[in-house]
Amino acid sequence: QVQFVESGGGLVQPGGSLSLSCAASRASFISMYTGEWYRQAPGKQRELVATIDTRGSPTYAGSAEGRFAISRDNARNTIYLQMNSLKPEDTAVYYCRVWGPGADYWGQGTQVTVSS
Image (cartoon, rainbow, N blue to C red):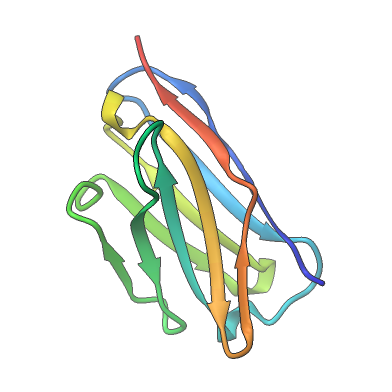
């Protein structure tokens, strides 16, 4: 069973940047799959942040538009989320999801904290 592992979270000051990665534990045909990033803040529901389809076309939640960029490298079996101009309200656990025909995988999450 393939697993997806997030990395790149941490503590950053407001206005700073972080780059998250979501990598498959073994070779996987992620080119067939849609990649997504979700986040869940304490006491709140998990929310969709960004999606990248199999063609590489991205879509974003309003809160991420213009600040975040989702991308994919199928050769590396990895989905990325570049986050710029971070705000305290971006503080959450960030999860990747990779799904497609007969598959729906979630990562374990990585903490992002935006604080001065």
